Image (cartoon, rainbow, N blue to C red; front, top):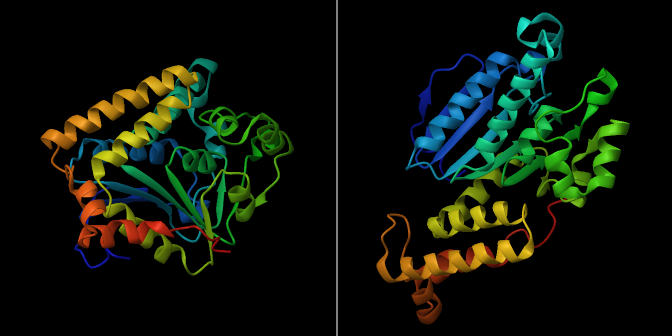
Length: 293
């Protein structure tokens, strides 16, 4: 991976590992004995780590991982029976809202987010992937929403965000039948982006990061914003945001007032066929145009 030679900066957490390497932050859920289940404690730490990324102006990319060969088994269901925080309906409602806010905070980051999935990504683990911009998974990865078989329902995207991604009929299939699905089905159903061989996850994540680094960072931020917001509203309102973004872009081209916006360099590269053209456009032209598996 292109950032692996940099010295990592780490923050102290008990149940997750937080690292920064240059402009890339990595959050690794670190409860491998319980398939990285999202306890109340690890969820609180996850919120704190994401907030650390949100406040950073130097971090451009955030990667989510799981320790021990699995991504995340979702909520720690044993806590549902044992913790007083889940002891009445109002507390459960408040906690569900807390998790929803966590997903929104990930989805709304002005960084590009990548879920690197190996092993199981079920329940809340699957919901976490759906809040990310890109999902790359190993061929052996499995996913699903088994909550129905425990007599509970999803709380932070398993029905809502999923239905917006893949439609209501398949969302019903996934939630009501509660089957486990292979990674390739998530790609075929437009839930995830890419399936790679089991030993190629790190390399594929690194390749994607390398491509993202070549881009105009401000342009990516604008695209992420208008896509995320536009899909939730009618077409006319969404196109109004596109038009406003176009106006914002033109002003940035003229003035270059954002630090990591390269002004007219992209247009000049198109005109002159210079080194930036080779570095940026040539790298992107055939990226992911053929399936990995």
